[in-house]
Image 1 (cartoon, one colour):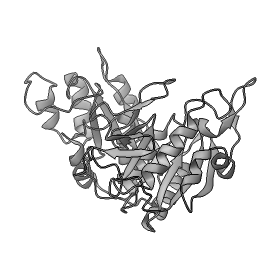
Image 2 (tube, one colour; image 1 turned 90 degrees about the vertical axis):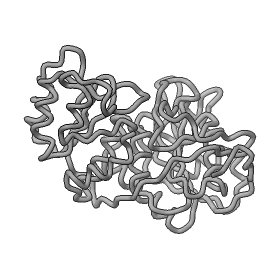
Image 3 (tube, helix red, strand yellow; image 1 turned 180 degrees about the vertical axis):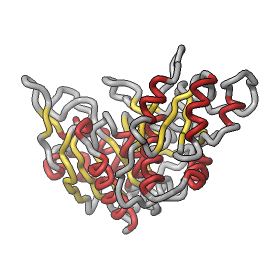
Image 4 (tube, one colour; image 1 turned 90 degrees about the horizontal axis):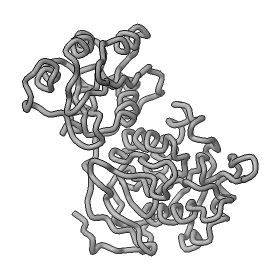
Length: 334
């Protein structure tokens, strides 16, 4: 276990920057910011990167993240993983709207020791006080560092280090836009010094050939009568990410709808609160967590709904059946 006294800053591996667009690569004011900077231009605009030897930069995509497709995300993740397999630390610059989803997918694929670090920006490169340069230097310092080895996929933003399984975009305009509600940050970057004080256990990797399955995120709310559940099932989904109230609670008639299909397709449940888990045996009323756990619904209260969707897409596309998918998510239940 590394601790807060580990402040080694000497780069121990070379770093490759993979750019995928987003605000960090945008410029413009009058008509709004638009994608502009490729990898070479982005790196050239950040003086602090000269401190890292053998730094290379490759443009993978240059899109706003709202335009990302599943194929785009898989392309980015494979490029990052393949570089990591060669012992190269990787930094992926990405739009913040869906950064956490691509980072989660990348963590599912990642099977090497060298770290992969996602970062981006809230302010365009042409804006006064642009945050992209500082985030990029911080991310490269983490990707090059000894303490980050074996940690999987990280998100570095606003001086904080988060794990991809925990990170969520929780603010639309703050320069500290990402947080980890369940665990808090794993460390910080201060004056170019990455400090890691905790770790998240890694999961066995998957290698889906594509992401061609249909997975819906279906929330539940007060007064839910199952209309949305029945509408979602009418589209013949391959899997469902199911929002539960409290710590795994649903209206009894809604739970019955999902329970009837949970043996045929994976139904993976999350908790609506940002922190917490699906309970086991606190409540005993109809539709409580006892009833949910008595079905084949798969609890995964540790993850956000968007993270569950990316992992479930990978499980389905890799050919896992319902029981194998249950095992894959068992590490996220608690």
